[in-house]
Image (cartoon, rainbow, N blue to C red):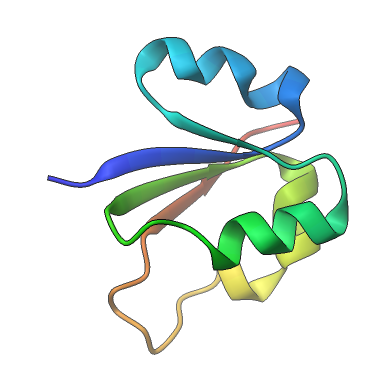
Length: 77
């Protein structure tokens, strides 16, 4: 069974740790990209803040050829 991770600003994703989500705090575009690239292979679900999703663009939010990519959802603003 895979794990869940959240990427975004601390104020938006910090509380998800209480539900067992691995929180990857990323407060700037470089940190968001780094967190996405360095996701552990065990992650099956990624929760992105709207800002993080905008930074990653199609790389994270549109279907791609890599079927092993985790399911990705975007939090509403």
